[in-house]
Length: 298
Picture 1 (cartoon, rainbow, N blue to C red):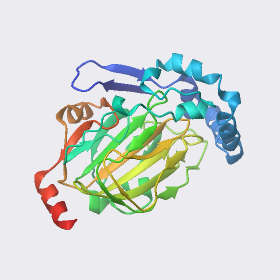
Picture 2 (picture 1 turned 90 degrees about the horizontal axis):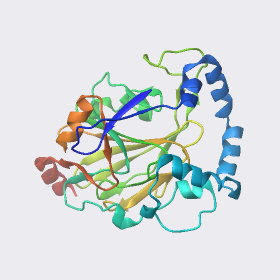
Picture 3 (picture 1 turned 90 degrees about the vertical axis):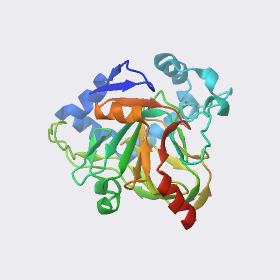
Picture 4 (picture 1 turned 135 degrees about the vertical axis):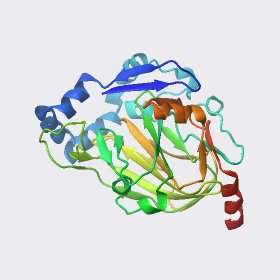
């Protein structure tokens, strides 16, 4: 699969493709059979034990070199395992938070896409296809129709911690276990419901954007989700959680008429191009009347 992305306010395309290994695992019958074995709980737990052990430390240097990671952006420490490095913390001044009221910030470093929410919207996340309802296994389409779905695709080279997009309060976290349906050949050009990923979601009652649903999506056999809080009063830019080893995705669902997305991001998304965004930077703003209504509510 080919991905096209752009830096903020740039016209230059950055093109990447899925690895040959992933294409084999997802696009061939034999690959799907092997994948089904790899995602079993036993194998997944063994991988987790290895990635959290000192035996995996040798993978760090190769990972840094392959992904051209600027280690000077991160805390200077002796990492005990591959996963310890994967969940590394950035030096805070390297990810400044836009603290202005009514400004929407990116929750993470990622490649971002924007979708208008319609009844027939289907979003491709980690080679699985989700409607808005199936994303959290609940009938929410009527409440969020004509709003926005913001998708943040994290790749292995990204910083894998994420923050709250605004100040407000949250409810508990709901976890949805990933499943694997079939190994029969299914074209990726159609709805390939042969798997769904482990997801965790919560409702954010934000000060400036109303009721926002945040969904963290982990990779099928890795990408473990670690949220810091259950019911909680949060501040804009405060760390919400992190992903362990593996690629991951965050989805934010906004209701109709509460948000203006920055023009460059909308323009790129309309051309099926992702926008490269950073943790804490501006990606949009609340509509004026929404801010007034939310002030009266809270």
